[in-house]
Image (cartoon, rainbow, N blue to C red; front, side, top):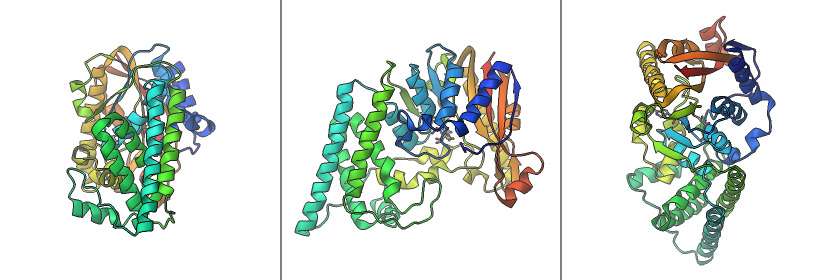
Length: 410
Ligand SMILES: C[S@@+](CC[C@H](N)C(=O)[O-])C[C@H]1O[C@@H](n2cnc3c(N)ncnc32)[C@H](O)[C@@H]1O
């Protein structure tokens, strides 16, 4: 969610709309929340602003501790806030990387287990550093590259080779091989540490960022990947210690298409929902994470096929892509209505976008897709700057905006 200030419009129930305005403004005014808990652990495209999530979780939680759901949990921003408020939480996302990261950011087992995380992470980093030094001294052949199940090793190697300096790649593969070994004994801990490796992966690669796939030159010293990995373990552990201060059960996660939500969440069982669904035609989560999928060995066919609102889905004919998006949105809102207990609410953060030179107004689409058992209680919209001629032409006199919408189950 961008931090650019813009005019805010609101409507609906006054108390709710006032909280939504505060949630939008918090993304510009609040410089602290994003640095608390586990929020700084891992980048993620179109991450919800943690200060916005904090206000929405308080609004939707409404002082009670019933289960909160984020069916597009991404890196888990809402879930971290919900967990910090003592809620039981459920995270759903079709992206395996999202589940890996969100699980790590909300992992609050007893303190002894979290100490094991730090000790094991440091031991793995130290072993990788020592192995690198020993290999340089003896000029021995490097260890063979890993072969994650489900990936053609030659194709994987070709795709990865361009993005890492050879010494960085060897060090990363060594760290990952040690995590593979750990997985045989302790899969849970291996997954949390894999999220730590994922958090540093793009920083030691030549990929500019998650959302920018251009090549950039980074000089990464020998040993730096292992040291960054150990630092990331410490950062996560410190955030988890703060998060664990209030008792709450460990979150439950499902790597699942939201359209299958009723298979894992009983009807009427959810106290509140705080998601930011994809913005139509704006991001390609499958592409943004491809380097991580390849390196870590995460299978992603379901995401490639089922991602809703993806940019690639809007590449062909606009009318049919927009119809598919509206159909998907109708399905999403119907699933949200089914999951909510009567009288409980969802706060959705969603933005306008442009595809093929045409404006897509998110609030209009939500109104059109609303099922009979969800009422639009309030909304607030903040104008966003239009970037470049294409956006200015597409939006014309009706400005582009980002919205928070509260929908209540009747
Ligand atoms: C805007 S992001 C959510 C970001 C999240 N709020 C955060 O703070 O990190 C939207 C998410 O929707 C997920 N997604 C896309 N299509 C999906 C589908 N069909 N079912 C479930 N999740 C999906 C993407 O993988 C992405 O993580």
